Image (spheres, rainbow, N blue to C red):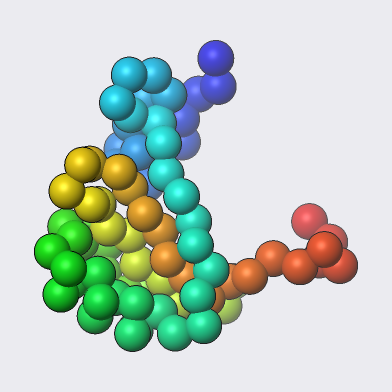
Length: 82
């Protein structure tokens, strides 16, 4: 079984079993607009808009069913070396 990250994000996601350990990252062009939509729709904001050191602007929210959603402007490309 894969271990979760030992940081704040790992705590939000939870253990990789049962109801925890699941999240999605969705790349968007405008994180601020998506943040406003998520708030208006009633999503629980787990981490507000944040500018990451790798260039992404993103936030993390939870829907009414408890699913964790990460939205950000970082969009990996096939040509990226990683």
